[in-house]
Length: 179
Length: 267
Image: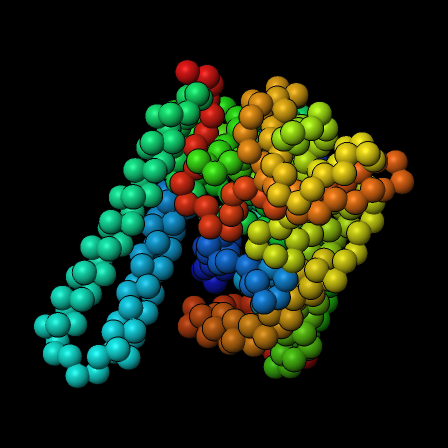
């Protein structure tokens, strides 16, 4: 539980830090996202109920910090990010046996893909609400760019989180023997 | 799937259903409450960001000094660094003096505010400012600088507010073009590849023939933005099937915002 609490704290601070990281103008204003990597690591390192709790927390934070309420309209209603995080984290959780066996490559790649999928689903919702489908190269960069960055950052972040998990004696990882 | 997983899933589904049933007002209240809760983190983060930027600027000037005069003694270097710091202060004083002058000559009641965070997400162009209800700020109040229109407030908590920028597709502003009777609606781009994106002035007549450089002001229609605030200048004009559309360069460099004013009323 200590490790779970640490992940919650890390998600909170990562979400705050994200607000201060400027977009990359050389990548068509793509943003850097740290929270998805932590959540997707948690999806593999934690059991299902705690993974749900972590996804819920991350989705709630993302919603309240970024959702746009203009007049009587909420562009993406509170709860959608929780749903997106939960679905994607559940997919990552399905790859847990491989992770426990010590194979991290797929998960690093999947972290990037899932980060892009979060942005793609947000963009599709916006497009649906505002009408007129626009998929410009800039849009693809802003969807794909953060995914590529997440993929690059994932090994380092996973190693960092795994080290913390080991130090805290994360009780959920020693299932290794059963696989 | 064991029992605890099923229970967790059911609890999550119930909370999710409850959240999804929230209306705009409940959502705004929750968002304002949350922003209020984390405002100490945001202001601390903003201060840290400013310090880091300041240190980076300082390092740059030291590098320049080293390039210019490798043989200067340490005392000389320190004096130059002090001079640089004083110049920074002077620049800051000038900037604030300009802002103060604008506040005094403006016909509006203005509440000065500093930007705390900017561009929190990929798809929405918003900034947060360090003023809220306790400073008399409410939702849907115009936000300006001495250069022109910045946007309007949306969610307002006690000490922090969210401002949707004029470059966001959801911030629609009724506008008029100088020297003409043309009126239209200014909207931002959905996806912008540049830090300062262009704006679209839609629904002007096909005969408008707007020229580059013509200025575009708020028309006052709609009730949120008072008339006469500079939005931007025409960059190009094109005729579409049913109307004319102009691309505008925003009057305010939205990527370099530091201080803004919230219009709370007329003097």
